[in-house]
Length: 348
Image 1 (cartoon, rainbow, N blue to C red):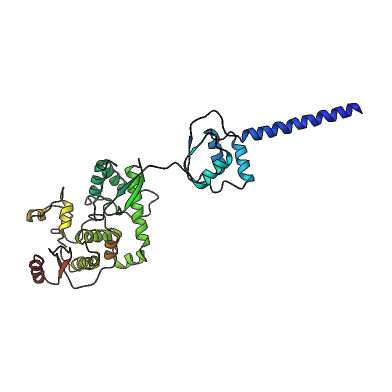
Image 2 (tube, rainbow, N blue to C red):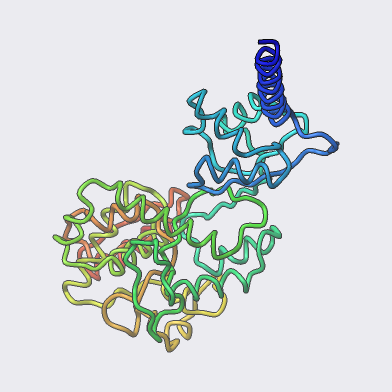
């Protein structure tokens, strides 16, 4: 009897030791990692599952045991709300602190830079502005734009034009004028794709855009080309649909558009004042010598100009001239004789 009692007692002691060792293993495995005095930075990519996150945290030294961390998450119904990003964990972080930070998306603040693309800017003007501000080199931006124009990103649904010899820059008019915020170090390619996606988004937001474009009989390229002409010719928003209507009237006549802004775009450098010799420049963008629209947009049009090109105001006008009274509005005419008269009136 004594032998059996001793055996039972020994077995009980072994069980207690095993349970104690297991409890100590679990307790120790859940304790903060020791031996580090600097914050640990961990990047979690979008779409990473909790098992992979736990393994990554162990590999980076944030936790001791990925299996125990996963069991803790499962027991506490956690892990489904973890957010991607770059985190900084204190070496003494507990499970609760780690989980709280991942749930809140408490990532390392990213240094950003604001990039403004003004309405009516060309790709080269955007590149000049970014270069002057030290954000990206001029040539790098232009080359990136031309490369993307030839090799359309797979995740972009925007209908870009096919490259051809007549286009100065394939993406001209497709970089939406807006103020953007980019992380410092963002590449020119990433900036351009972001601008293209903004154009895509803005067009989708226009009610019945696809139906209206189809009804107009124009391609997106033609629409944005008209919109860019309106953008460079008009300052006052109320006049944009009317000027768009004049452009369509001349196209339907047909009459050459004879828009000075297209000459400025064709020149190597814009001029404060155009001369008659400038109107003779050999370029597919010279609407004084070429019939119809130029081969593509000449600038990034605003949303108001795009809407005006999509829904122009009907009129019998074929001409307009800017007033010299500081209002930046126009005088409109149906005939060339009336236009000449308006030119004299505009000087008053």
